[in-house]
Length: 277
Ligand SMILES: NC(=O)c1ccc[n+]([C@@H]2O[C@H](COP(=O)([O-])OP(=O)(O)OC[C@H]3O[C@@H](n4cnc5c(N)ncnc54)[C@H](O)[C@@H]3O)[C@@H](O)[C@H]2O)c1
Image 1: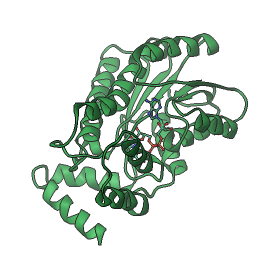
Image 2 (image 1 turned 60 degrees about the horizontal axis):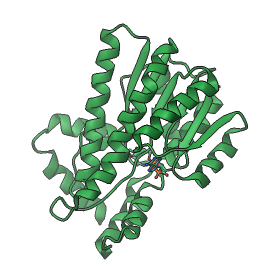
Image 3 (image 1 turned 90 degrees about the horizontal axis):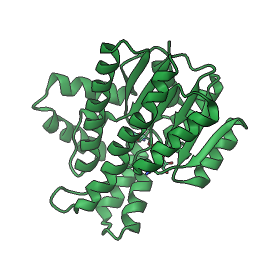
Image 4 (image 1 turned 30 degrees about the vertical axis):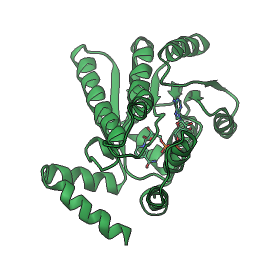
């Protein structure tokens, strides 16, 4: 039911990383693409990679009205929309104690509201296609909570709940709409660097520990090639999997948390200390 060939596929956050790789993979499997991002330069580079028959638009997924207008524009352009990949996302690091509410609002706006906006705006079109799919990109941080990541973890736990509720509703109503939540582990993208740059630009104090954390992510944790991640995601969508774990790290942590639901934080801290050596 969810094969990509000939389908109109929408990808948010397509100007970099997993979104760009999703665009390339979907195009290679015969999808017709609508790509968006706040980063118009990155988006243009992605569009150049996937060929000429591509709809592109600057879109901030945290802007509800803009996402609604965009969904109508894409539907009008293609006449139908089959698949929405709510992929755009940002990372952020700070303690709960030191965080301003504005930090939560910014991360929630993109990672959670962005997913809800994209889902609600495109769902009527996806249903109308008669063979549609909603794909929401969460994270291994939907089951693993980490210190100094409460903004990100809150959104990624929530995207999981939102998406699993939607799946139950689509099944209960007998809709021909697949729903997949994606939990990537560490993927080699710009996400950690972008988070540090954004924090610096917004005037937050960047400590040597913050810089070391970003280096640690880039050098040790974000390992899988985004192209491989996109192949796993699209293959999971084509198989109509309800959840797709991307990478052995995501699979191991999923298992760890289920085996030791109360003790995993202590075990994980030990693993982190070993990795930092
Ligand atoms: N890289 C990883 O290890 C990893 C792990 C788990 C989950 N994820 C998730 O994968 C998704 C893609 O992240 P990535 O790793 O490719 O990061 P990335 O930084 O390489 O790409 C994210 C893209 O989203 C865009 N974006 C940011 N704010 C936006 C907004 N308001 N509206 C529209 N676009 C916006 C950025 O411009 C960028 O092009 C995110 O949801 C992220 O949380 C990534």
